[in-house]
Image (cartoon, rainbow, N blue to C red; front, side, top):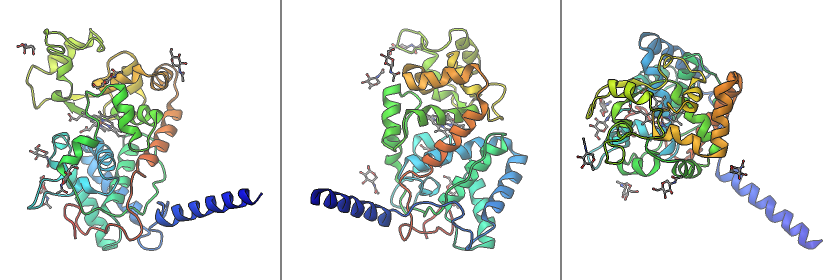
Length: 324
Ligand code: HEM
Ligand SMILES: *[C@@H]1O[C@H](CO)[C@@H](O)[C@H](O)[C@H]1NC(C)=O
Ligand SMILES: *[C@@H]1O[C@H](CO)[C@@H](O)[C@H](O)[C@H]1NC(C)=O
Ligand SMILES: *[C@@H]1O[C@H](CO)[C@@H](O)[C@H](O)[C@H]1NC(C)=O
Ligand SMILES: *[C@@H]1O[C@H](CO)[C@@H](O)[C@H](O)[C@H]1NC(C)=O
Ligand SMILES: *[C@@H]1O[C@H](CO)[C@@H](O)[C@H](O)[C@H]1NC(C)=O
Ligand SMILES: CC(=O)N[C@H]1CO[C@H](CO)[C@@H](O)[C@@H]1O
């Protein structure tokens, strides 16, 4: 009996400690301090995306890159300073675009509520608005992230999964961030929008194993079509990841992957695990659109919670490219 009481008490203490140390994010965090922040972000991003719809996808990707390196702390937005190179200078970031868009949104927010809203939160909101601008789902974004002060070039490669990862590596990479294989297959659905450089998948087309071959896990009729777009060594051409509907957030991605036309090794790899394969197949056949939308919203909120800085940690950056 006494044993039980002690056990319950210890558990109580543990819960108390956890909840004191890690303040959690909250929908409506800026209700009092910047009540219009969500409207400002939506309005500014809508203006930007209406003029340049191809800027929407890169904002979603940028939020992913932010969250996987040092948590969602806006570190991806920082510019290099004298003593080193920033995350945005690492190879996987060569293809990141949209820093200017985030700067514009931040300026609009600063005009109304100076020094209140973090760049990390602005990026999380802009990513949500990017998805819904492209006819995807919308969701409530828990807020209250603080901005980090460190952006480290060499942490990018060790934290972001590259496009040539197999399923074991992908699952491990997501697990390291507290995301499971369902999150992996759901968030990979982000590849329903946007474009990729040939360099991210051309290894699958030419000389895949050094015998002049291509990747057998890629649809053999799709290979010549991709070869047409991407000549060997092409560094500049952009290819639609979900051809024909790369400007619409839909579930076509799963149809493509099921047909073995996923662009990256990491897309094809979703067919190599029970959970992810099952999800791909189910969403490739019947119209499960609203279920995917629901799942995507849930996994985005989960991703947006990775290693966030809250309370007195970090800072509210005045300019997203520089620490205060
Ligand atoms: C599962 C691991 C993932 C890998 C290996 C991966 C890899 C890549 C690569 C290589 C590109 C093309 C970059 C280029 O060459 O221009 C890309 C684009 C993109 N990724 Fe991912 N990605 C992953 C997960 C995600 C997640 C979780 C999201 C968001 C939820 C996402 C959203 C995007 C978007 C929207 C683009 C298009 C960007 C544009 O149009 O510029 N990706 N990804
Ligand atoms: C930050 O660096 C990028 C290039 O990485 C550059 O285009 C941009 O102008 C810089 N931002 C500021 C505010 O200096
Ligand atoms: C950046 O990260 C690497 C690898 O984690 C570490 O060795 C290095 O000291 C870091 N650099 C800075 C300037 O913090
Ligand atoms: C994935 O790659 C790792 C490292 O190369 C390897 O050890 C593992 O066996 C591979 N897994 C699969 C399923 O191919
Ligand atoms: C293909 O790879 C092999 C082995 O790495 C190499 O010897 C050969 O030159 C490559 N062929 C082409 C066309 O790049
Ligand atoms: C996964 O597939 C294997 C082989 O088909 C099967 O033995 C296993 O029970 C499956 N696991 C789950 C969780 O479905
Ligand atoms: C936007 C940006 O800073 N891109 C950089 C990504 O990294 C390469 C070098 O690896 C730089 O040349 C780019 O300017």
